Image (tube, rainbow, N blue to C red; front, side, top):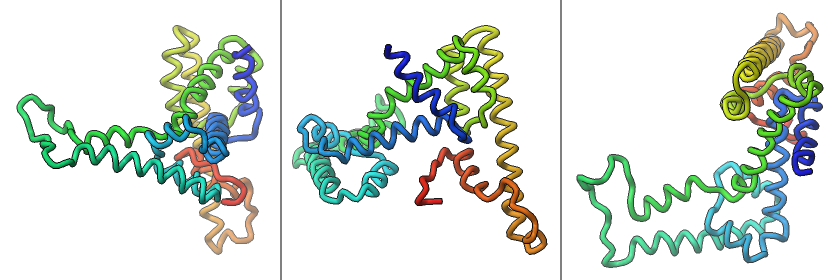
Length: 244
């Protein structure tokens, strides 16, 4: 049953007219995680403990701000700042020795409050909400590719993938496929990536030409949204309707 539940968003993403179906899957999870974080759940003790300890990456903090729940975000950040002050303070109390270089310490290894902050920088409550389900979506892509001819046709007819998710699928193929099946998948993945990157590149070139007076009376062809699609292809940026 769980497998069937995961196939729904995967199939919906590949059915959509998108330059990267994996971006659609990730964006859906990201939107849900942002909504959850700024819903009344932030008042629950177990959630507040997690957001206080983990904080947020730069990208997701900006998205939380864009939700316009200023009081909610203020309460979340105040608790996180309390945690920062407490933990950094532990390493800066009078009498606490600052870690000095040592023969037994690896070059570049940090200690004290710097070590705490370095560890914290790798954490984000929103990212943590996304990661597990996203990994399951990727596993489902390969499950469907192995078991359903219809999905393989759908995969081959897609508009390819952004650079980041092309890499994600390329690496995951080694985990979920083997032998000739893996080779066939990688070959098809490479074709989809290169052919569709060239297609969007050509649209972007025509978009650029349209700024030249010599082309002002020429049709736009498929280039009107070429810049937006190029941002998705190169950097996995999915703009919503307000930003276009």
